[in-house]
Length: 281
Image (cartoon, rainbow, N blue to C red; front, top):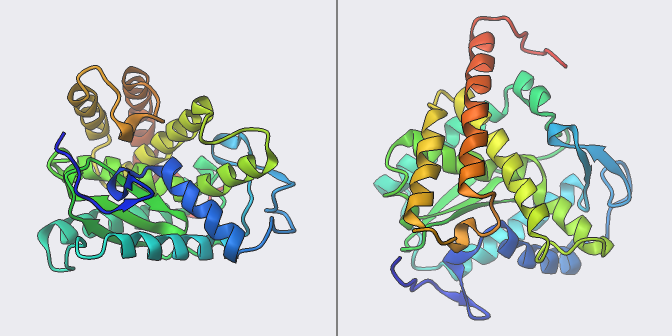
Protein backbone atom coordinates (compact mmCIF):
# COMPACT_ATOMS: atom_id res chain seq x y z
CA UNK A 1 0.00 0.00 0.00
CA UNK A 2 1.31 3.43 -0.87
CA UNK A 3 2.33 5.65 2.01
CA UNK A 4 -0.36 8.12 2.96
CA UNK A 5 0.27 11.85 2.62
CA UNK A 6 -2.99 12.70 4.41
CA UNK A 7 -3.08 15.33 7.17
CA UNK A 8 -2.29 14.02 10.64
CA UNK A 9 -3.97 14.43 14.00
CA UNK A 10 -1.59 13.75 16.89
CA UNK A 11 0.59 11.75 14.52
CA UNK A 12 -2.26 9.68 13.12
CA UNK A 13 -3.07 9.92 9.37
CA UNK A 14 -6.59 11.21 8.81
CA UNK A 15 -7.25 8.62 6.12
CA UNK A 16 -6.48 5.75 8.47
CA UNK A 17 -9.39 6.48 10.75
CA UNK A 18 -11.97 3.76 11.19
CA UNK A 19 -15.10 3.82 13.35
CA UNK A 20 -12.97 3.06 16.40
CA UNK A 21 -10.54 5.88 15.66
CA UNK A 22 -13.27 8.41 15.01
CA UNK A 23 -14.81 7.59 18.39
CA UNK A 24 -11.88 9.29 20.11
CA UNK A 25 -13.01 12.49 18.48
CA UNK A 26 -16.66 11.83 19.34
CA UNK A 27 -15.83 11.38 23.01
CA UNK A 28 -14.15 14.78 23.06
CA UNK A 29 -17.05 16.38 21.19
CA UNK A 30 -19.72 14.91 23.44
CA UNK A 31 -17.83 15.80 26.60
CA UNK A 32 -17.26 19.39 25.50
CA UNK A 33 -20.42 20.24 23.67
CA UNK A 34 -23.19 17.76 24.31
CA UNK A 35 -23.23 17.40 28.08
CA UNK A 36 -23.52 14.17 30.02
CA UNK A 37 -25.66 11.11 29.32
CA UNK A 38 -29.23 12.05 28.42
CA UNK A 39 -32.23 11.27 30.50
CA UNK A 40 -35.11 9.23 29.11
CA UNK A 41 -35.54 6.02 27.16
CA UNK A 42 -32.39 6.36 25.11
CA UNK A 43 -30.21 7.35 28.07
CA UNK A 44 -27.01 5.62 29.04
CA UNK A 45 -28.68 3.87 31.98
CA UNK A 46 -31.34 2.09 29.98
CA UNK A 47 -31.00 -0.78 27.52
CA UNK A 48 -33.13 -1.34 24.46
CA UNK A 49 -33.20 -4.13 21.93
CA UNK A 50 -31.02 -3.12 19.01
CA UNK A 51 -30.40 -4.69 15.60
CA UNK A 52 -30.67 -8.43 15.84
CA UNK A 53 -32.75 -7.81 18.97
CA UNK A 54 -29.69 -7.86 21.19
CA UNK A 55 -29.37 -5.62 24.27
CA UNK A 56 -28.04 -2.21 23.29
CA UNK A 57 -27.15 0.59 25.68
CA UNK A 58 -26.89 4.09 24.16
CA UNK A 59 -25.16 7.19 25.52
CA UNK A 60 -26.53 9.90 23.25
CA UNK A 61 -30.02 11.22 22.71
CA UNK A 62 -31.11 11.79 19.09
CA UNK A 63 -30.25 15.50 19.39
CA UNK A 64 -26.85 14.77 20.92
CA UNK A 65 -26.06 12.17 18.29
CA UNK A 66 -26.89 14.64 15.53
CA UNK A 67 -24.76 17.38 17.05
CA UNK A 68 -21.84 15.02 17.70
CA UNK A 69 -21.94 13.86 14.07
CA UNK A 70 -22.06 17.44 12.78
CA UNK A 71 -19.13 18.58 14.91
CA UNK A 72 -16.98 15.55 14.18
CA UNK A 73 -17.68 15.84 10.45
CA UNK A 74 -16.77 19.54 10.42
CA UNK A 75 -13.45 18.73 12.07
CA UNK A 76 -12.69 15.89 9.66
CA UNK A 77 -13.43 18.14 6.67
CA UNK A 78 -11.21 20.84 8.14
CA UNK A 79 -8.35 18.37 8.45
CA UNK A 80 -8.92 17.18 4.88
CA UNK A 81 -8.95 20.71 3.48
CA UNK A 82 -7.44 20.85 0.00
CA UNK A 83 -8.00 17.14 -0.58
CA UNK A 84 -11.80 17.08 -0.90
CA UNK A 85 -12.89 16.36 -4.47
CA UNK A 86 -15.36 18.80 -6.09
CA UNK A 87 -19.01 17.85 -6.49
CA UNK A 88 -18.69 17.45 -10.27
CA UNK A 89 -15.81 14.97 -10.03
CA UNK A 90 -16.79 11.54 -11.46
CA UNK A 91 -15.76 9.75 -8.25
CA UNK A 92 -17.99 12.04 -6.21
CA UNK A 93 -20.96 11.66 -8.54
CA UNK A 94 -20.57 7.89 -8.49
CA UNK A 95 -20.20 7.67 -4.72
CA UNK A 96 -23.12 9.95 -4.00
CA UNK A 97 -25.36 8.11 -6.47
CA UNK A 98 -24.68 4.75 -4.80
CA UNK A 99 -25.12 6.26 -1.33
CA UNK A 100 -28.44 7.86 -2.30
CA UNK A 101 -29.86 4.49 -3.35
CA UNK A 102 -28.79 2.93 -0.07
CA UNK A 103 -30.30 5.78 1.95
CA UNK A 104 -33.63 5.34 0.14
CA UNK A 105 -33.53 1.63 0.97
CA UNK A 106 -32.89 2.46 4.63
CA UNK A 107 -36.25 4.23 4.64
CA UNK A 108 -38.19 1.06 3.75
CA UNK A 109 -40.27 0.40 6.87
CA UNK A 110 -40.55 -3.41 6.63
CA UNK A 111 -36.77 -3.59 6.30
CA UNK A 112 -36.34 -1.42 9.39
CA UNK A 113 -38.64 -3.75 11.32
CA UNK A 114 -36.90 -6.88 10.05
CA UNK A 115 -33.53 -5.59 11.22
CA UNK A 116 -35.07 -3.96 14.30
CA UNK A 117 -33.57 -0.55 13.56
CA UNK A 118 -34.62 2.25 15.90
CA UNK A 119 -34.69 5.38 13.76
CA UNK A 120 -37.92 7.07 14.91
CA UNK A 121 -37.06 10.41 16.45
CA UNK A 122 -33.57 10.46 14.93
CA UNK A 123 -32.54 12.92 12.25
CA UNK A 124 -30.08 11.80 9.62
CA UNK A 125 -28.36 14.42 7.49
CA UNK A 126 -26.92 12.11 4.86
CA UNK A 127 -23.87 13.65 3.23
CA UNK A 128 -20.91 12.18 1.35
CA UNK A 129 -17.53 13.70 0.60
CA UNK A 130 -14.67 12.01 -1.19
CA UNK A 131 -11.11 12.73 -0.02
CA UNK A 132 -8.06 12.22 -2.22
CA UNK A 133 -5.85 9.64 -0.52
CA UNK A 134 -4.13 6.37 -1.35
CA UNK A 135 -5.52 4.81 1.82
CA UNK A 136 -8.18 2.13 1.50
CA UNK A 137 -10.87 3.36 3.86
CA UNK A 138 -14.31 4.87 4.34
CA UNK A 139 -16.44 5.68 7.38
CA UNK A 140 -19.84 7.05 8.36
CA UNK A 141 -20.28 9.26 11.41
CA UNK A 142 -23.45 9.57 13.49
CA UNK A 143 -26.28 11.36 11.65
CA UNK A 144 -25.09 9.98 8.31
CA UNK A 145 -21.96 12.01 7.58
CA UNK A 146 -19.71 9.96 5.29
CA UNK A 147 -16.10 10.16 4.16
CA UNK A 148 -14.80 7.95 1.35
CA UNK A 149 -11.12 7.87 0.46
CA UNK A 150 -10.19 7.53 -3.21
CA UNK A 151 -7.89 4.62 -2.42
CA UNK A 152 -10.85 2.30 -1.97
CA UNK A 153 -12.55 3.18 -5.26
CA UNK A 154 -10.28 1.19 -7.63
CA UNK A 155 -10.86 -1.89 -5.46
CA UNK A 156 -14.64 -1.39 -5.33
CA UNK A 157 -14.67 -1.56 -9.11
CA UNK A 158 -18.40 -1.97 -9.66
CA UNK A 159 -21.21 0.05 -8.11
CA UNK A 160 -22.35 -3.18 -6.43
CA UNK A 161 -19.00 -3.53 -4.67
CA UNK A 162 -19.04 0.13 -3.68
CA UNK A 163 -22.56 -0.42 -2.31
CA UNK A 164 -21.15 -3.22 -0.14
CA UNK A 165 -18.66 -0.77 1.38
CA UNK A 166 -21.07 2.14 1.81
CA UNK A 167 -23.90 -0.10 3.01
CA UNK A 168 -21.65 -1.42 5.74
CA UNK A 169 -20.61 2.07 6.84
CA UNK A 170 -24.15 3.49 6.70
CA UNK A 171 -25.25 0.59 8.88
CA UNK A 172 -23.02 1.81 11.71
CA UNK A 173 -24.97 5.07 11.77
CA UNK A 174 -28.36 3.40 11.50
CA UNK A 175 -27.52 1.06 14.37
CA UNK A 176 -26.18 3.90 16.58
CA UNK A 177 -22.94 2.00 17.07
CA UNK A 178 -20.94 5.09 18.04
CA UNK A 179 -23.44 6.01 20.75
CA UNK A 180 -23.33 2.45 22.02
CA UNK A 181 -19.54 2.43 22.24
CA UNK A 182 -19.50 5.78 24.02
CA UNK A 183 -21.97 4.35 26.57
CA UNK A 184 -19.76 1.34 27.18
CA UNK A 185 -16.66 3.50 27.52
CA UNK A 186 -18.38 5.84 29.98
CA UNK A 187 -19.62 2.94 32.05
CA UNK A 188 -16.10 1.67 32.51
CA UNK A 189 -17.29 -1.89 31.86
CA UNK A 190 -15.62 -2.26 28.47
CA UNK A 191 -12.94 -0.25 26.69
CA UNK A 192 -13.88 0.13 23.06
CA UNK A 193 -10.22 0.69 22.16
CA UNK A 194 -9.17 -2.65 23.59
CA UNK A 195 -12.14 -4.98 23.33
CA UNK A 196 -11.72 -6.32 19.80
CA UNK A 197 -14.36 -9.01 20.31
CA UNK A 198 -16.93 -6.30 20.96
CA UNK A 199 -15.71 -4.25 18.00
CA UNK A 200 -16.01 -7.26 15.74
CA UNK A 201 -19.54 -7.98 16.94
CA UNK A 202 -20.58 -4.53 15.76
CA UNK A 203 -18.72 -5.00 12.48
CA UNK A 204 -20.53 -8.27 11.85
CA UNK A 205 -23.81 -6.54 12.63
CA UNK A 206 -22.98 -3.81 10.10
CA UNK A 207 -22.23 -6.52 7.54
CA UNK A 208 -25.64 -8.08 8.19
CA UNK A 209 -27.55 -4.81 7.91
CA UNK A 210 -25.46 -3.72 4.95
CA UNK A 211 -26.15 -6.76 2.82
CA UNK A 212 -29.90 -6.23 3.27
CA UNK A 213 -29.56 -2.52 2.51
CA UNK A 214 -27.70 -3.09 -0.74
CA UNK A 215 -30.16 -5.79 -1.81
CA UNK A 216 -33.21 -3.62 -1.16
CA UNK A 217 -31.43 -0.80 -3.01
CA UNK A 218 -31.26 -2.99 -6.10
CA UNK A 219 -27.59 -3.99 -5.90
CA UNK A 220 -26.28 -7.55 -6.16
CA UNK A 221 -25.43 -8.78 -2.63
CA UNK A 222 -23.18 -11.48 -4.08
CA UNK A 223 -20.78 -8.67 -4.93
CA UNK A 224 -20.24 -8.09 -1.20
CA UNK A 225 -18.73 -11.57 -0.98
CA UNK A 226 -16.50 -10.86 -3.98
CA UNK A 227 -15.36 -7.53 -2.58
CA UNK A 228 -14.39 -8.86 0.85
CA UNK A 229 -12.67 -11.85 -0.69
CA UNK A 230 -10.63 -9.41 -2.77
CA UNK A 231 -9.83 -7.39 0.35
CA UNK A 232 -8.65 -10.51 2.13
CA UNK A 233 -6.41 -11.45 -0.80
CA UNK A 234 -4.95 -7.94 -0.90
CA UNK A 235 -3.97 -8.22 2.74
CA UNK A 236 -1.51 -10.98 1.82
CA UNK A 237 -2.27 -12.87 5.00
CA UNK A 238 -1.83 -9.79 7.18
CA UNK A 239 -4.54 -7.58 8.61
CA UNK A 240 -4.62 -4.02 7.22
CA UNK A 241 -5.73 -1.33 9.66
CA UNK A 242 -9.05 -0.96 7.84
CA UNK A 243 -9.84 -4.56 8.80
CA UNK A 244 -8.20 -4.72 12.23
CA UNK A 245 -11.46 -4.47 14.15
CA UNK A 246 -13.47 -6.53 11.66
CA UNK A 247 -14.35 -10.23 11.75
CA UNK A 248 -11.84 -12.55 10.12
CA UNK A 249 -12.05 -12.66 6.33
CA UNK A 250 -13.16 -16.28 6.24
CA UNK A 251 -15.86 -15.74 8.87
CA UNK A 252 -17.11 -12.57 7.20
CA UNK A 253 -17.34 -14.21 3.79
CA UNK A 254 -19.14 -17.22 5.29
CA UNK A 255 -21.70 -14.95 6.95
CA UNK A 256 -22.27 -12.83 3.85
CA UNK A 257 -22.78 -15.95 1.75
CA UNK A 258 -25.36 -17.14 4.30
CA UNK A 259 -27.20 -13.80 4.42
CA UNK A 260 -27.26 -13.21 0.65
CA UNK A 261 -30.12 -15.64 -0.16
CA UNK A 262 -32.06 -14.37 2.86
CA UNK A 263 -31.75 -10.78 1.63
CA UNK A 264 -32.75 -11.76 -1.90
CA UNK A 265 -35.77 -13.67 -0.63
CA UNK A 266 -36.85 -10.70 1.47
CA UNK A 267 -36.49 -8.31 -1.46
CA UNK A 268 -38.48 -10.66 -3.71
CA UNK A 269 -41.29 -10.90 -1.17
CA UNK A 270 -41.37 -7.11 -0.83
CA UNK A 271 -41.40 -6.56 -4.60
CA UNK A 272 -44.23 -9.05 -5.01
CA UNK A 273 -46.33 -7.30 -2.38
CA UNK A 274 -46.20 -10.18 0.07
CA UNK A 275 -44.90 -7.81 2.75
CA UNK A 276 -47.11 -4.82 3.45
CA UNK A 277 -45.45 -1.40 3.50
CA UNK A 278 -46.27 -1.01 7.21
CA UNK A 279 -45.71 -4.65 8.16
CA UNK A 280 -44.34 -5.26 11.64
CA UNK A 281 -42.82 -8.39 13.03
